[in-house]
Image (cartoon, rainbow, N blue to C red; front, side, top):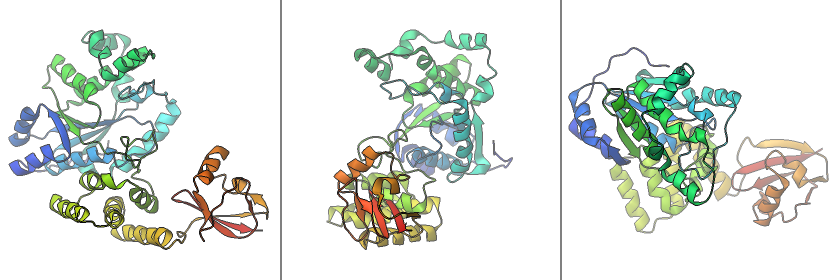
Amino acid sequence: MFLKKKTSQIITNSLEIEKLLTNNVEEIIGVDELRKKLLSGRKLRIKFGVDITRPNIHIGHAVGLRKLREFQKLGHTVIFLIGDATTRIGDPSGRDKTRPLLTEKEIQKNSKTYTTQVEKILDADKTEIRRNSEWFDKMSMFDFIKLLTFVTHSQIINREAFQKRIKEGKEIFAHELIYPILQGYDSVVLKADAAVHADQLFNEHFGRMYQEKFKQEPQAIITVSMLVGIDGKNKMSKSLDNYIGITDNSNDMFGKVMSIPDNIILDYFRMATDMPIYEIDKIKTKLESGANPKDIKIILAKEIVKIYYEENEAQKAKENFTKTFAERGAPENIKEIIVNKGTSIYDAVLELVKSKNELRRLIGDGAVSEVNGNKINDIYFKIEKDTILKIGKRRFLKIKIK
């Protein structure tokens, strides 16, 4: 927990509150009650939970985190909940198969990175960092059974992901059925006034239900807009590897933004930048008038990078991208190796590709070349001279012969 004891004025400006309740928001359950609480001048407790399946937070998560920052600017407290206990179970939301379980060592390793990352967006003075192992590790079996008595089998099994599996003849394991119960009880322990999420509506409804059972006012549920991944098809996800991590280095972050399809440019401006709506409207007009999407994406990439890095670092990333891709050069500070003359390309690039099959696919797609433009078309290509290889869109390797 890094919340500091610091009083702050609660802002009840109705225009600011309406902006909070509508900007990048898809739906709010309990919106009228939440509006009244925001206008009352009482300091609210806003929950945002994440399971720590991977060590990195991405800019899709940041849509919710930035909504939390809006609450903080009005004076309210954010509880950033690290689901180290629920990660042991695995959230079935949106899953057509059981999520692989992490070891305790993996969970602890991942959780250590989260505090540092959320400080890039949230105000530390108005943030509580909590872990749900704080209460679940102490809960007795009989206390847990008591929680189960509030829920029916049909309430849980009717969730869409489970019904889909049943129709497809796929298994549903007992541990997956209890996940929404645990997430719901989190809201009771934290006394949450509202929960912010992108794809947890089913689970957060259990929070409202359990709060009522425990004589608390039910939390509002704020569904924020979901950012599509850089593939332009699926939601941004670490498991799908279509994400931009907020700890990606500035060059990688810039390059990934430049790779998004043109049709989601405006969504990224709205959900992933601090650019005012009227400026985004101007960009929309430019695109509709025939502006080159690549030029607009350069503006977008710089806007995103400067949120997580200094302005000069964002400018350097822009210059590096221009040099590397527009001028067909190589970025600075790329990895350098020294090999024997005649070394196979696979042995040379082993650290940059996952397998020989990946290299074969990249070569087949014409995605491996020397920076001078010479394509490499043979997986058995041998390194005979000093060169710089470009592998895929953003991987480079400088090779020197002994």
